[in-house]
Amino acid sequence: MSADTPNQAAAVTGREQRVLEIIETARAKRPRFRDARVTMAHGAGGKATQTLIEGLLLPAFNNPALEVLGDAGRIRAGDSQLAMTTDSFVVRPLRFPGGSIGELAVNGTVNDLAVSGARPLALSLSMILEEGLDSAVLRAEMEAVAAAARTAGVSIIAGDTKVVERGHADGMYLCTTGVGIVDPRADTSPAGLRAGDRVIVSGTVGDHGTAIMLARNEFDLDADIESDTRSLWPAVDALLEAAGPAVHCMRDATRGGIASALNELARASGVAVRVSEAAIPVRPAVAGAAELLGIDPAYIANEGKFLAFVAAEAADAALAALRAVAGCEDAAVIGEVLSEPPGMVLVDTAFGGLRVMDQLVGDPLPRIC
Ligand code: MG
Image 1 (cartoon, rainbow, N blue to C red):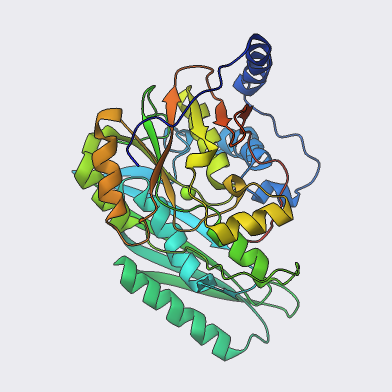
Image 2 (image 1 turned 90 degrees about the horizontal axis):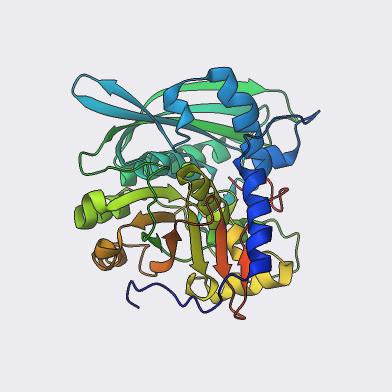
């Protein structure tokens, strides 16, 4: 497939236009955090998380580095720019097809650095362990952390251990903080989307969330689906080498899936994104499981996939470079950035209609990372 814009047969009608305008006005207001209690949705990466961040955290910590809402914050150190990010991992179960909490704890943090255009250098590892945890389980996870760190080219240079009473922490929670150095080839930001940019996804979507769902055995479903957890730095490196400053923005599509990431970025850049449902790569087994469970794969979490917004003239080169990297063989152009209506994500459905791809509401699948 080439980097041409996917088919956009359906035009926006007058009635659709009015509905879009109403949604747009509501979206433009900064949300206020009014919830009386924390709910699972505040950790799901969708609308409630956004309200928490923009309505409570940003006003509390008020500073320009945080205001950008990137995957990592940037600090200047002499002639270099460093990037720093942090992430907590509470996945249940601890082990699942394709990975485990230890591997996620490394890759999740390394990937937030990578999509910020920073080469990952070092991590800290903070553990909250449950009293009574089997030492073999702890040992296995530390080996998983060490192996993932080796693969990602980072060292664990600091750490902390806390133990809480039996019945808390579900075995273990892990928290990693990562530091990287901003790559001179990278000129990206969440506000960097420009009309005409091609939207590239680095591979099939929904693998991780579906693998976790099946691993919990809550559904009578048997499918061969593995988490896609992996370090994204090699893919980002190849993309920057092929397209450099033509890469306007990158974001890993974790909780809330590509739908939530697209919405965040459309909003941050004040542009619209129009994607073609048929162009989004989804493994048949994932598509089947998602259909049975009534979940759109675009909202399912990934742990080894990212979105890149690339100037049209560099999109073919970017796509070819990505597809040559292990884990990105199914990379595809799934849509285009438009100037109107700002902050909106529209999808041309497989049935020929046009609909809004809104942010995730609620939490269909808690504790996936
Ligand atoms: Mg991220």
